[in-house]
Length: 242
Image (cartoon, rainbow, N blue to C red; front, side):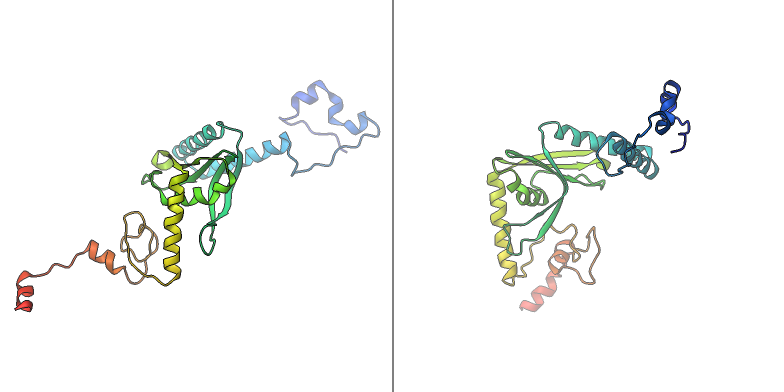
């Protein structure tokens, strides 16, 4: 091993202990450990933090960094409540539905009698947690993780809208949601194509003329009628009836 060079990180060490710059010469027979970049130690954690900080600072503006910091503080405060088990990008399924569709939640914190589901949103239009169907779906999907819990706390973390909202869905509410979605699932699987547009439910539907997502080549006839009702001429109607 060659003599270790001076650097900012070892300056204090070398000034006080010259042997530390050439340990193999100072300690005959010494076998230095092989560096393990995957080991859970302070050095590797420090490197990972440095890399993450570099990525964030290079990618985001000062204002955006403030928003991200606020989001992290919110999540931190929730984590401090208990010694939760933590799952990021949690994989679950709609276990109560016929096809048991897979689902992914941004963050799940749980112990046997308490469950928190955190959903990150990065749009600028505030989204409410109360009555949020997506939140109920996630909460129900991951409820088996906390079998003793009396419900699930669902959080919206939306930093760029300064929106940090949460709601507690009781076990009764989640059971009603299970029944409602299971009934809809059975009807759909049986071939139902009944229209039922709603303000929240149609936001990203491709058949919605005002969809926030990609649009189809033809639009929902019921939504078109709601948005652009046909104006009938009363004289023409009377002529048809006479």
